[in-house]
Image (tube, rainbow, N blue to C red; front, side):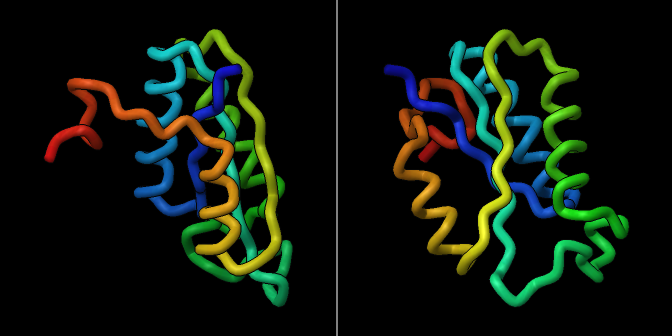
Length: 110
């Protein structure tokens, strides 16, 4: 069973750069892509940050999926809005993710 590539987005430019890299990597490897946004339990669905462009978190995820869909992508794109402590939820999401490094990818350089 293939595990998906998992990427977190928060509406910031750097999260969209991570999304683009993850979508390209998923396409290159023929894997599904899972886009996740985590909000703290006390945070509102309508964030008051500049990074979100005043969109709801659901709209933020839909825009991220649409951006990923514009790439040459043959597999499934899924989104998830998780609630909890951001670092803990992302760590939990990563447990089901494909974390293998490939030669030539930026993350493999050490």
